[in-house]
Amino acid sequence: MRYVPEGQRSLESLADDSVGCYVISTESDTRYWIHCDRRLVRRMPSAENERALRLRGDGEDLILEEIVECRRGRPLLLLINLRLPGVFITTRESTPIIRIDPIPEIRGWS
Image (tube, rainbow, N blue to C red; front, side, top):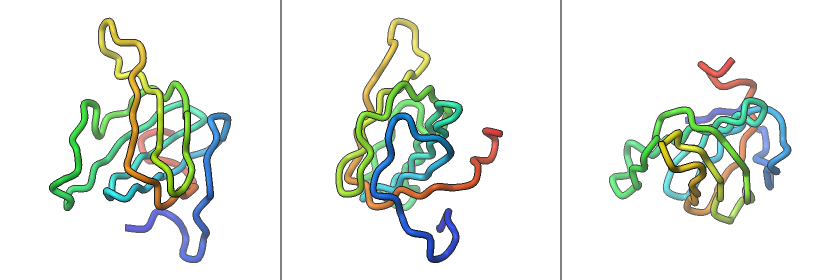
């Protein structure tokens, strides 16, 4: 499924101080929907990839504390808040990134 207009190029990287909304696609076909303005992240593992890990908070809007690394060809590394008692921050690391696509807005986050 494409999230960006045909012909639009994928970004090389995304910084923690970026603005706007993005879909990060990884080698495992997992998608990370990131809303930089609202500091939210939603991880959507591939339904077709049976080997894709299922993690706590998948499909939920989680607080994005920091984008540590987001560069094509490298694993995505995020600091997130799962809103769990006694756990302030946890790390999410992905398989290598294949695309970083800006999108107009994320439904349900406007």
